[in-house]
Image (tube, rainbow, N blue to C red; front, side):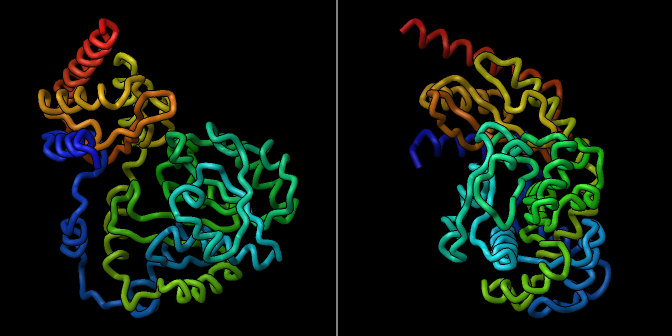
Amino acid sequence: MTQLTRTITEAYEHASFPIAGHGKRNIQVLKDALDAYDGDIHSDKYGEGSVIEPFQERMARLLGKPAAVFFPSGTMAQQIALRIWSDAAGTKKVAYHPLSHLELHEKDGVKELHRLEPVLIGDSTRPVELADLLQLEEDVACVLLELPQREIGGQLPAYEELVKMSAYCREKGIKLHLDGARLFECLPYYGKTAAEISELFDSVYVSFYKGLGGIAGAVLAGEPELTEPSKIWKRRHGGDLISLYPYILSAEYYMERRLPLMDRYRRDAQELAALFNECHAVSTLPVVPPTNMFHVRVGMPKERLGPVIVAVTEETGFGFTPYLREDKDGGCAFEISIGDRYAELPKDRLREAFRVLDRRLKASASDSFNL
């Protein structure tokens, strides 16, 4: 970590008003869930018991699937889903977006652990579309779609496009898997229930710590032909911990509180994106976010933008980001995910903070030009 990166992170951590997320990511997340639990807590044991089984049944109903299995991580759940569909189809080829989590962040897990052969589909600047499936030249066991596509700012395909892709895969005998880590965040945009979206897919994964803010954990939902072998694979992966109830209790607690707030988070993200887009050399992707997340790009190198971000944070008390990612065009980018914090911000002071940001960005650009 460079000194500049460390300084940006420290400024954000000491900010009075961080603008993104839910806030606490510490033991208080579990403590709140335990304090709210009414009754005796009976631990689950190796995937069975009075805590985990009713929760899995509830998630299956919510997603409109016959069964659901709790996993300690989405990485584990998705690799297992693709392996099961691959074995059933008799081919190692699976298709997904070039910027899928499996391609970028899992150390080639699907290749090294399961010997699967990814086929990358679509353009890296947009979500997968039916036209991309029509161009597949290889037989694949499964197509994975991520809703929303995180690495391109949380973009979403139109619902009609999802329906077309679902119909095509079923016609061709290709399994369609949903990387729904942020599925709940998509529902206000689509105007659909989780079950209505999931109906288009053969298997669905959802996360409990992204927009929901739980400790960790995920479920994989689908027909028994998927969920039953997934339990065996979970054991093989070491995912059958002796007890998972802390994850489950926090998932239940935060689902109850935050599922009803997803539309508010989306509207807050749209409001915040508009403030960013009014600043010099700043743009958001997408311009109008369909969910609670978006990317912010600033056309300025890190060595100039970093001090601006730190100075604005120290002057106004508002934390914009704990990091800056340099892009290939010489600018910087960072991700915003809106949660509980944003509604608590003093909006007059927030708008003033953006005026300060705009002024300092213009001054930095002018200084650079004069050099």
